[in-house]
Structure formats: C-alpha cells, structure tokens
Image (tube, helix red, strand yellow):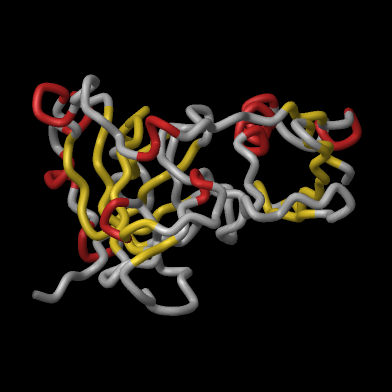
Length: 221
C-alpha cells in the first residue's frame, strides 16, 4: 500500500526539541492543518465542525535515522530503561507513523488555502505531513478505566518555570501561557541533569534559552 500526504501541519515549533511528548499535554498550544492543493475540497470536511476532537495520522518526518532494534528507552522511564517499541509511542518505528488526538477549535471554510482546521494540544512539528484525519468518537475511543502500562507506575513531575519580564513581553498572552506549559514538562532528554548546561529551543520563531536546577527551570534569554 502506498500512502500520500493530504495536508501539512503548522506549529510554533520549527524543530523537534521542546515539542510535547504527547498530544493534549499543552492545551493552549495552537496549530493549523492546511490541505495540499489537490485535496482542498470543502466537501471532504463537511460535518467535521460537529466534533470536538479529531485524530491526526502523520509522519515522524524529522527522524534522521531509521528504527534500530526492537526496544527503545522511553523518557517517562528516565531514558535508561529499555522496553519493547510496540509498548511505547517512540517516534523510531518501522513505518514512522504518529497518531494524535487534538481538540478541533474551528473549521475555517473560506480561507485562500481552502479549508483550514484550527486545533489545540498537538504534539507535531511545523511542516509535518498529515496522512489522514478521522473524527474522535467518545463512545468508541474513550476508555478512562484502561490500564496504561509503565505510564501508570512512573511519576511525571512538572517543573516550576520562571520567565523574566523582558522575555515574557516578546510573546502574546496566549503564546506565553503555552510556552510556560511546554517548559514545565521538561523538554530536556531525561538523562541530562547538568545545572550549568544551557538548553535552547525555538518557539514562535524565537530562540528560547534556559537552564534547569532541580525542579526549577529558568529562562535566561
């Protein structure tokens, strides 16, 4: 089977570092889905506005190397414990396909780019190819009592984030709220624990530099 991208995702993240490791973790993070010219047909999204959430099927297009081996090291387990790749959501998979449930805020029908889907809570990089879109159906897709393997037994502690006013004023209120949420999730590789190391990530076209000491993340420029 051959699959073809139908759309492209637009995000504040121009590179992988800093992107939330799951969808829904940063609810204020805005993004858009724009269809490729041959798929800009308003009839294809007719009725989608009646759903609160949608599934995006996409490609880990920024992977620099193919999947290697049957096990991976999930960040949730500290980056040192190995577990089977199919028991994780690692981006290093045979077919490099991602699956994300995102909130559908609006379907813009009269855009010059054809229909545009405005969403929040996505974990996709800017320019990510989208292969399919499906509506999220609560009675079939939601299983609140389901077990979640190692996720249930490993603690995920968020960081306290300090952003100085001279940095904060460079973002809108919505962008600043999203940036705080992103940083609180600790975007560093989890085997990094140096208080002197300066990390950098791009967000909304700006380079954000920060350090981490214990449970506190300090934006420095």
